Length: 243
Ligand code: F6R
Image (cartoon, rainbow, N blue to C red; front, side, top):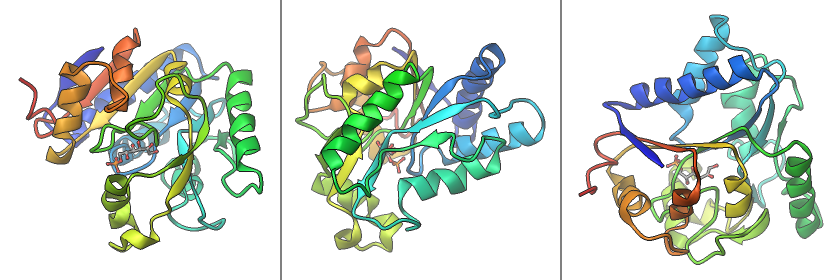
């Protein structure tokens, strides 16, 4: 695992975009794993700018989202499908329908999990997976205590995550769903390259555990230590508890 500390969220976005630009030059029909939340937003702005400038193209890219809330109706602004459509897919030249997510509106959520894992397997999994990290060390919505070898599954959001995400729901923690569908840790680990972005003091403990802790279900992101091409991009605040 490679750790790079950069001065600003903008510098992190540029470095992550460099990785994606290099991938797309080499493989225009790459499979890209996308994360939601605030951490990748500067990256999606940077990718949009590079696409507009003709430096890269998503025309042949297939995308797979990491996760989705259960219980939000179609079109809800905080559904991750809406988020990805608004913040990336519609801003670049990616084909409509090329960015896939788990079907959290399905009446059979277990089947939706199996289907999503199968779709990813059929696509050969991700060439590059963008990740954020929760303050409790989750990646995707793999919360502490879950199995390190999990596949796409139905999960419960921990209280800490619901509190962290209440800012997207007008500050109302009760409005944050309790359930989600998420790629499992083993699904995420199938990606040929992992690029994790973390900014701010709130991520400092999770980053210290990720970089310096033992691999443990208590800090799910630590499984990334077992990946042979994982890049962790952090700002000085997120790096502040590293020894
Ligand atoms: C989002 C996701 C989560 C977030 C994490 C950090 O698809 O899977 O793991 O990356 O909760 O969220 P932010 O970036 O909002 O702090």
